Image (cartoon, rainbow, N blue to C red):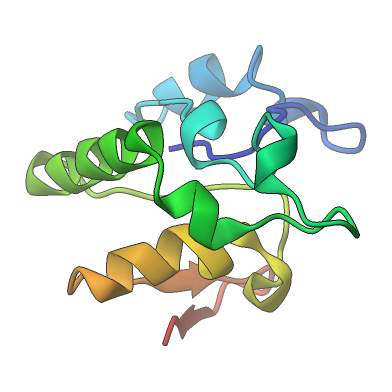
Amino acid sequence: MDVRSWPRSRYVEWADAAVLPELIAEGGVKYLFLGKELGGRPEGDEFYDAEGHVLYGKVAEQDWFEEAILRLERGTEEYRVAIMCSEEDPSHCHRRLLVSKVLLERGMTVAHIRKSGRSTSSV
């Protein structure tokens, strides 16, 4: 599940949404883009403070966010789900600050896979 607001990369060609779905399908992995609903850069000035920081609490209150979280939860009933974005360090990422926070509050287990291949728990 791709939760990048802009699903492309200037540095890694294979990470573009135009390439990635076909590439990972070769390994039996399905691609789903939910960056509009679960991305770290929502559309609308009401989701940003005066310094331009995202107001994640406000995002989490939106119906479209809730619907995407429910879709993610339903997906875990049938699939092994991985959430990808472009930030390697979860301490700086909306995966932890928004998506993981909500999933943890709902009793789900969340781990972050780091560049090294090691995973760290989200708490």
